[in-house]
Image (cartoon, rainbow, N blue to C red):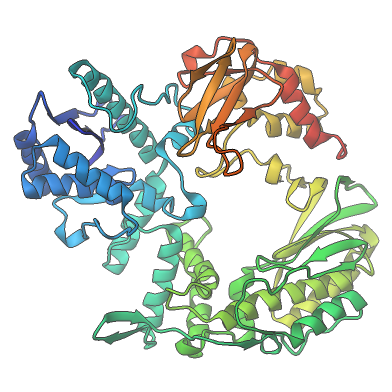
Length: 614
């Protein structure tokens, strides 16, 4: 059984609330527990009993960042028999302020109850993906995402504890909702744990991929770690300098003079670090500008529309499993892992083909194949060899540039983006394109997959809509509305309506006014530490929550982010308008969304996506 739980801590009150995961389909209602250690109540004994029973029954506690905060705090209380809320609060502050992520970690062998951390599973502990529960509440469209009405560190009065308890229970419910959204990921990790006999439960997808690859390497006899007086250390290949001529295959050649200039530039480079290798490196081919970069090659027309008909077709050509395929076809490997690395790579790729897309086995092998490239430039990884990193990215970019050059003679280049090229061509020339691709595949050892589009609406290389011949739609950048959990799901009505305007010819204003889901109009503002959000109400500042849901409304008030002063003006707090020139309606409780929507603002935002690509 799983228990969803959360804790709250103030100088004179600690709370732990939990909810049993129930079988909703069977009509079960999850039981709820509340434990308090405060100036008014001491539930330490009951809390001990509850945890002991969970341990004996081999149940699991599920939280959000519980490995980093909630469980170390709970472990501290139970192991020390701590019933002084001030002492618990000091421990909490020490955890929060620690610069060492492992300083307060309780390792799996020491935990009193198995822990499952949704924060870790979704890789929110990565700086680029860091996401709060409050942000998830907004993205999950929960009706009430209000914050506590009193600041952290407040000495509570007795009536305030009821408010704190309600807030804690709301966070448990929010975590439960996110748990439901994560069931596929949890089941996947449970299956891997059974299959390999090791704990994958709190691994991110990236970590799973790297660990699966490591397991297969070790099975094949490759040593991944050195063991010595200071413990286990990853084997790595350190390179003081790298000659990029070592990273360019012999089959690379160009007729295009600008691509040839890029090739000659790279060939001469001797680098000491991978950062900055591609700075200002660009070339023109087929009438569009190609930009080379660590993340891949990019090129695109801007503000154009392409429509297929009886004469013209739109063809997208993607390299299959690009980075793994480059390593396998060219025999690239981190030097310390030996050529066996390439053999294991090929075995995993072959294994993946045996399973249907969407199956746990296919997903696991995909993670193993794709996780290695990024890890090869990670100084803490067993895959670390920066020459391998450069071999993969340079080979991929130059290979795609070669394909673009050859296709430009018979087709119009539309885009080139990391692992593929999109072209427009006369249908009579399709056989020539296929011949070019076949020769390129033979030369590079890579394979191309084709997708045909009916229409493409392109703002730039990062933002476009492509309608496939089967009617499905590919969206990128500002047109995407199926966003990941860590992304900002604000004003999703804008890309949704823009798509209807472009693909269906719907009128902007009327479509907005008839849009059925009011949550699509909602936006999120966030004040970081030291800043605050306020509503300007007739000259006075009305404080808002640090994470604030709102929409642009008629009859509302201006929202402002108040930020700390800069050194040049130490006495002047900065005031930055949110939705400058427009009024808003705050509604962390959706019941407060009572003002009429200002459709003009949303129409202007839709126009930015539509005008120029119609």
